[in-house]
Amino acid sequence: MLINMKKNSFTIRILFILLILLNFQKVVFSEIMHLTKCLTPKHSFVKNEYILDFEKSLMIRNFVYDNKTYKKLKLTDLSIKKKNSIERFIYKDKNFFLTDKVGYPQFYTQLLFEKNNPIIKIKTVINNEEALTHLSKCKKIELYEKES
Image (cartoon, rainbow, N blue to C red; front, side, top):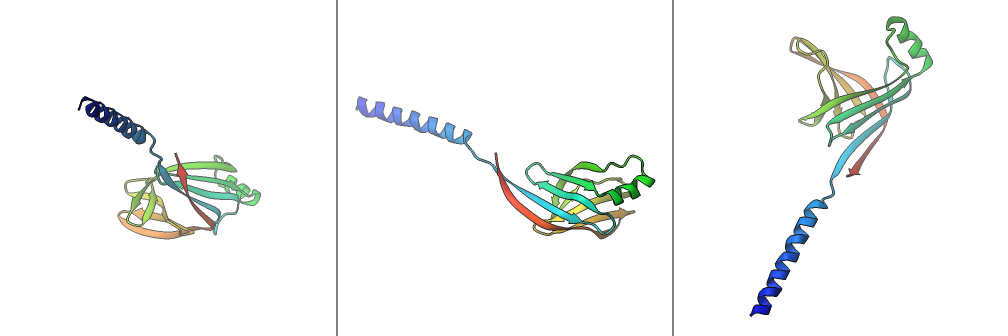
């Protein structure tokens, strides 16, 4: 009987240690959507891409204007850069992912994304009146899981 108790105690200890180790060995997968070769009607780019990290709730836009667009924009805004990167927080609202509001409260804009949709829209709100406008269309969408 004493031998059975020792065996049971040993088995319980092993199971307890395994449970603790398994909890620390969790593998987390998060999804990232990468939109590339995005075209806009008003501007031309050498590079224009959006990266949406759903785990971090973050949108990163990397872009490089072509020379013609850069020169045109530089005439009216001296702070414009030819190559830039923008980060914005995102959140989910129904089936859409929206960036944080810029210009809040009476007038603000947000970028609007849908999963697996190449069209990026801009949502403009003036005095609680909403308008959605087509901002960009991307030629390539990649969805992948990031392991951490």
